Length: 558
Image (tube, rainbow, N blue to C red; front, side, top):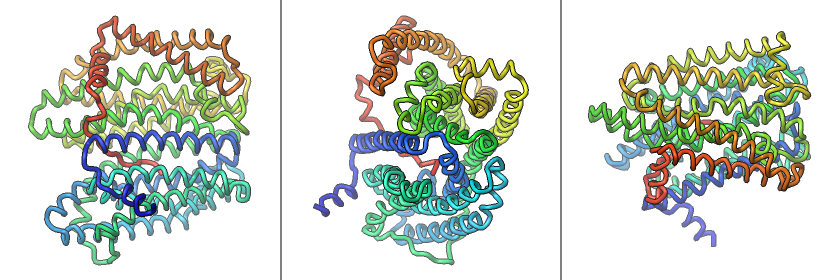
């Protein structure tokens, strides 16, 4: 039995159809486990100082993973592995050993330094927390410093499993990470409290790496540590990974600032910020990540062939499809926000006020959903054109603008009663405490939208006629989205009389039916307007889209 299971996990995936099925299925399953993870945390801790400690403690390990561990990201290493393997197994062995040795020294050194500096860093970042709370943040952060180490090694092992088409074990590893957190939440929190969740994080990260080890051993490529690593190899890999690292670090630093600001607010503010950010990132993963990754190889090929017309056309077509999906889904998320939050998180200690405040934060985050998706595409468009400096500088200045805007909004919310009442009344949270946290997702969205607009302007300046192709779709999708939002609102009122709006099933059915009604209205209106994007989507479905090429992604957060 064990032999058969191992054979299934480590067998080679030979066809694109098999790869698509495996990666797609496990990606959905991983998202389901992520929802279960957040629901358990909400159920046990609610919006509380305990959960604030957990999410605050995540920030520094998360930053280390995104920056340092990107040296061994899958998208960087796989081309090198394939190239070295073609030169012979010995060349590949030298490459793997050099990368492993260098990365081991790097990640462990950074983790040790962070361990020593954690009290200083935590006090600097989370000034609003009491001394006792801050000491717990330090302890949990130190525990979770093991997670970027394990996940970094998992990236390295994952590069080998990807290069040799072992998609099953690669697709399973994120599931084990979430399973570890869920295990810690269910079985360890009663005895250890929030420390039990931190132990689960480390266990999940360790399983994320270990599940890939048997194949690496079997292939004879288990890395060997050595202090005499090849510096020329390290330099080549670092040059490629550096632009990605710098760009991601800007986004991480901006979010660390938002968490830092939330620590100065009422207890539970960090939890509200984190829960709403997790929920809004689902839309980014479904639309932005999928389309930007799918377009990247074609964009690179067109530019390398000096076919600038085809390059711009591909960018325009992908942008139109992102707009076609993002704006209607944004409208649905805004209108159905309370139903979404209540169904996914609403149980136990997560009460109705927590639901309303998190739903309001979700609505403000989701305003920038289209901008977030377009940012991924524009950055990959610039990378395809060999331009890495411009996206970095735009992200740097935009992140600074985001930070300044968020700070200014928090101050305005505190000092101007009219502005405070306008925001809280519009989002229907004027009667609950802790609403100052809403300025953080609002500042995030304003900064992100500005970032996307600057990227758009820069791309248009360099590659003419891009906007002329895209703007009609933008106006059309915006109009349809407003209609869909109104339809969803009407649907909520209609179906509220058929189902109990207090029960979980009633809330779920009310939101589901209102959403389906709005989608039906949107499809009819798009069809009446002769939407090309609707026709393309329908054609893809009829052509059995699951037979198209699979592009695997890197994890970008711990």
